[in-house]
Length: 218
Image 1: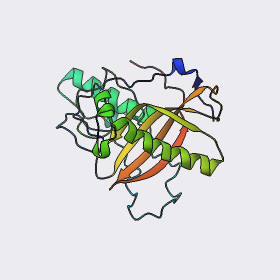
Image 2: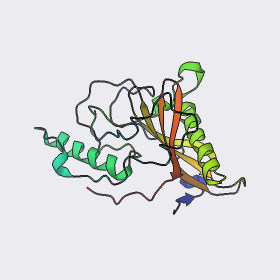
Image 3: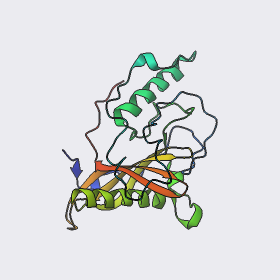
């Protein structure tokens, strides 16, 4: 698989402030919102009683094979909202949930995946850790499983940004910087981790190098 590598200076080290307008909580709270979602339901079957270390869901991306169809979009009387909802639905599928904040996104979403804001990531949660540390710990679990299952030596460095789909089984889409060896001179590589978090338990779904970004569309 191709990887996207660069020196540390070329990887964004701080997440962009969210433009989705959602009163986000990394544990699942959400404001009243206004557009339909392109949510990801593929890991809803993850069970709190699932055997620890099970590989049943490992490296299964529920977005694989999904395509965006404009005919699936809801109709809105507001033309600007319609365009932003269309952009959101297409972007969610094309990036498989790992999209970045943009003023092209709707201010609110009815449900589905939201961007974690800088405030979300820097605010302290239960246990005294920040949101950034919370998602970083989950990314580390994905890295550890990826290394163990694939005989790799990926080293987590820091969180770049995160998205999440809140609910009883909250899904996280974490983009982070990593090195692929123990050498401090190894280039930073952008990686993606997806996890399901439920009742205080983290279920790693996958860890992989970030693919090239999709072509920019209007």
